[in-house]
Amino acid sequence: MDYTKALGLPVTEAQVAEMESHAEDIDFAMAAEEESKLRHDVMAHVHTFAHCCPTAAPIIHLGATSCYVGDNTDLIMLRDGFDILLPKLARVIDRLSNFAEKYAGLPTLGFTHYQPAQLTTVGKRACLWLQDLAMDMRNLQRAREDLRFRGVKGTTGTQASFLQLFQGDHDKVEDLDRMVTEMAGFKKAYMVTGQTYSRKVDIDCLSHLASMGATIHKICTDIRLLANLKEIEEPFEKEQIGSSAMPYKRNPMRCERCCSLARHLIALLADPLQTASVQWLERTLDDSANRRISLPESFLTADIILSTLQNITEGLVVYPKVIERHILHELPFMATENIIMAMVKAGGNRQDCHEKIRVLSQQAATVVKHEGGDNDLLARVQADPYFAPILGHLDNILDPKTFIGRAPQQVARFLSEEVRPLLEPYKAEIDVKIELEL
Image (tube, rainbow, N blue to C red; front, side, top):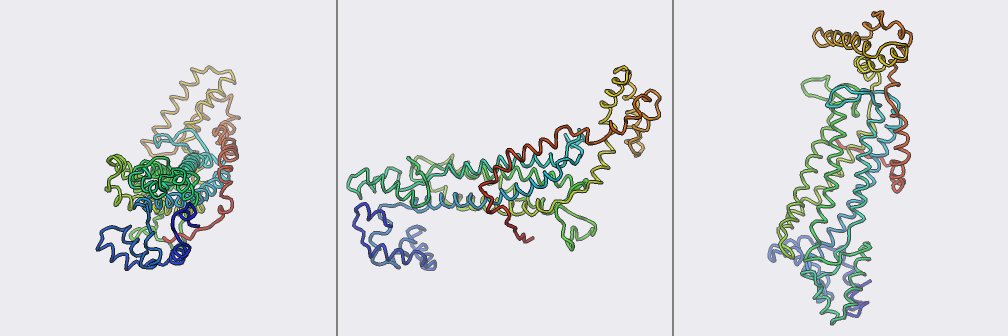
């Protein structure tokens, strides 16, 4: 439907029909030739379209400005870009949720400062990743819903050209703005603009993509660290080569790729920040070339990172025996507080027991650090008559599952209350597989 005609402008049915019939007939060669002469991309396409539509030529681009074409198109692309990314992010969250649920109760060493700390579970650690991804999901959803259309605003945002077309009828100008906005699939248009929509809109969109990049960099770095420990690995194909020189290598190259691209995605945020800061008054054109790179490149980068991360999360490999060995290496030190409490329950003195444990722990640490031996603290405890009252309970005291607190319960509740509901809007697309070309 032609809204200018519906509102009373002299636009004929023949002109509308002609433009509709040639909407997809774009002569890019002619447009390029026109732009080489005019040095104006929009006018080059206006002339090219007019060549296809000689009857409609007099009214093409009537009352409009370049930003009516360019900015409105960018807003459509931003919205549609989010519509592409959100289901992909949902699939990553779904795959990682399944992983967290499967390993909710598998104890593993926690790390603070990348030093062994209190136990957690493999699934609970995955929930830390999921929590950040869930925040990214909500941020992207909000940024998408906050987008408005520029609509018909004229050269400096005053709608003066449209007011003239409608001979001073303000209601018809507002009706046209509303109709065009709805036609483009937006609920609202920005009420005030300069020549462009505020470039802070670009900041809002790209900042959430950059934030998601930070999340994915952290996740993939964690996996790379765990791969070094041989506890968890990304998928590794049967004939895949890890290193041209070292045939035994299993390098985490998918995670490394995600980290590499995530840094680029984060760095791209500097573009809209600087662009918005240097827009003079109603507009300057130094935003244009930058935005033509930074906007699509941010979405394209986020897209391939999510596809790669989906591939990773669909094939994560866990090595429980390696994890168990690492736990047993560190558990004696972590169990000292439990041993002290058990001794006190058996009638011992807390301070005396603490001193006994301190001395034995230092002796065991010397064996580990200076002699390269195994942690023999438990053997020392078992050999010391002082601890005779609790020797029969040591197996229970040292069961790794008694050191993981409420981790399994936290996983179950988190997935049920916060993660699964977030995926509901994307159920129809959640099972889509991707073929990752490496």
